Amino acid sequence: DAGVIQSPRHEVTEMGQEVTLRCKPISGHDYLFWYRQTMMRGLELLIYFNNNVPIDDSGMPEDRFSAKMPNASFSTLKIQPSEPRDSAVYFCASSSKDRVFNEQYFGPGTRLTVT
Amino acid sequence: DQQVKQNSPSLSVQEGRISILNCDYTNSMFDYFLWYKKYPAEGPTFLISISSIKDKNEDGRFTVFLNKSAKHLSLHIVPSQPGDSAVYFCAARGGNKLVFGAGTILRVKS
Image 1 (cartoon, rainbow over the protein chains, first blue to last red):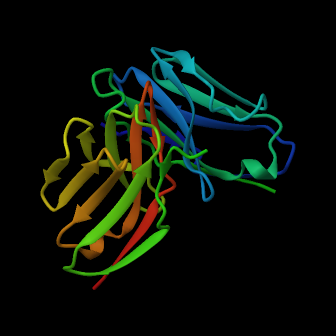
Image 2 (cartoon, rainbow over the protein chains, first blue to last red; image 1 turned 90 degrees about the vertical axis):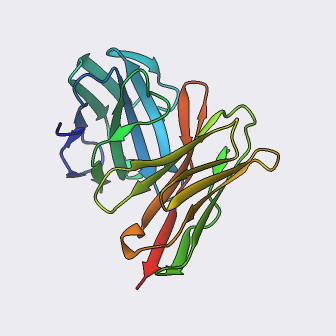
């Protein structure tokens, strides 16, 4: 299996622009997670889905952030409008239902820079 | 309010010696603990875990110890190898979430 795939790997954008991050989970995994990594706060859970349905979005920082999972093999995290403080590495992770909160498989991340 | 804390941002160890990475938590409801390892430009990968009903779990060179009364866990790597140089994240399961610490950078010098 190819593992969790994220695109783009790097994104540089100007403040105010819309940013869309993409994720393809491991085939057969029922759960998908979006995390953000910063130096100050480490890895923070933003939102997670079960069977394409958002279950907990309490970690989403503001209304500028939104996430969708239109099918089992694709999810997006959108920031509109983007701000410099959104600069971070964003990870997508997936897991099967029997290992969902024991072990998650992470993608390589998208490094976002907002200038 | 960080529920999982890794107070040492970095650790440097000589090859062949023991590496000890520490993690403290505040929520007594956490029932499962994990360590993830992360190399540059890659996502974190699962390393080892321990249930709250145990106090030790061993997997090869890696051992995790849990002290529930102190709300403290540690990861021991013996012997340390240069390939172990990475960022190590401690994580705890609470309800339906994994809560991660900020990570500790381990450097193993050859």
